[in-house]
Image (cartoon, rainbow, N blue to C red; front, side, top):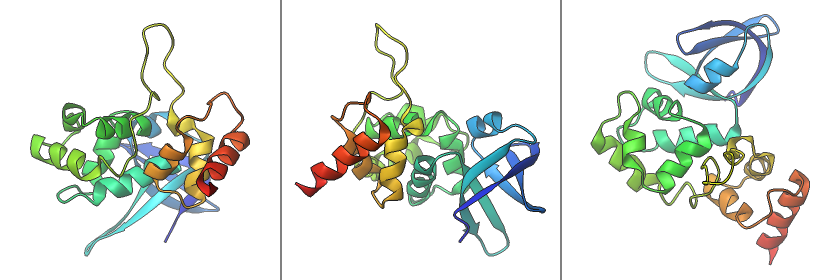
Length: 195
């Protein structure tokens, strides 16, 4: 299994990038915001999902571990293949998609290319309890700027790297001050679990 790639972005075309890793080019399909963020000749680390079918093998890539875990949850839903899951993740940040599912926002999920109302309903029903509680991440309150996206939340990434599910990591960090350092937030989340 190819867990991630670190290399140079050598080519970009139609939602796909080629990552050159020591002379070997890996073609990786990515979500729209990752495609826009990756620049030619930049060094990038991409978390990958290796999808094997009878007639083809494909790599799907994500800028964060959270996005990869959300992708894996999406493809576990009956009727949602890798391309539809990538279309859902292309709607916004991984946290925005996670929040939409957690709040049962079927209309948001349905905006993805190739995802109809019944499929969007199935995604929400099947995954609502698996993605964790809704958060303020990615929302705008009336008096301030948007809150920092959880896709950029290193504490969430660290907990998932330690084996937490997306839902468990989100729950563990709820109520912990986001102004604290990453290590302090992870430490507090781990201590709360041990109680």
